[in-house]
Amino acid sequence: MRVIFFLLLLANLAVYGWFQLDGGGLQVQLQSREKNASAVKIVTGQLGNTAEPASTEAPASAPAEASTAPATPVPSAQPTPTATTAPKPTAAPTAVAEKLACLRWTGITGEQIDSARSKLGGLGITATEKSSGESTKVWVYMPPLESQEVAKAKAQQLASLGVTDYFVVNNGGRWQNAISLGIFSTREAGERHLAELQAKGVRSAVVRDRDDTLKQASFTMKGLSEEQVAKLNKLSAQFKGSVLRETSCK
Image (cartoon, helix red, strand yellow):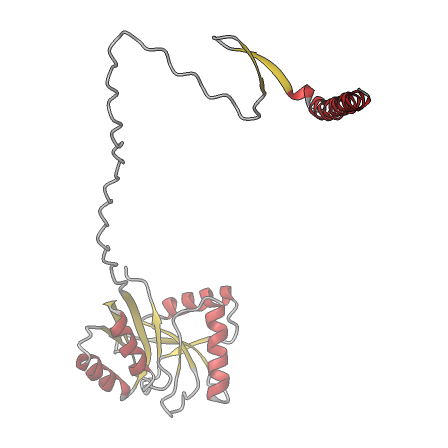
């Protein structure tokens, strides 16, 4: 009997100990789950209330309700035509009219006159010639200066005063380095021109009877091209003392 009693006692102790160990483990597991109890929400479904953990993902959108009306076909988008600008017609370049010049060549004296006339004809340039003849009576001039350089410097001063009709005599005669200011048919015309020069500031000019040894000529040319002007510049450089200047085309 004692043996059976002790066996039953041991069995009871064993069962008690097992329940103690199993209950502690269950309590630990429940306590660990209660730590995240705030993350559990109750979601009511159509079939019943089921507790499910909340999902951090966004809920999927509900499907659209079925419509009894037939679907209207949506026309496909057509590409919008891009407006194109027609290129503007390029204007044809306008031909620039060549500027024509009018020149007067003065200071041609003595034997130079025939040579200048011949060379102008060789260049194909038409000129109006004006020379001192029997009708010329008086000469307005500045007496000969000491050198060609001084005479040219004086001529530049005349140009700065607005005098346009002059040339330096360079024929090697008695009037070498004089400055001619015009030849006139009457003394009255010569003296009137002298007064005009004095009004401009010319002080050393005088009027005298024309000297027959000083034959002079000038050439006036109109409607010259740039090429002809260039040729005339080269030609005038061959005649010492001559002056080629632009004049009015009227």
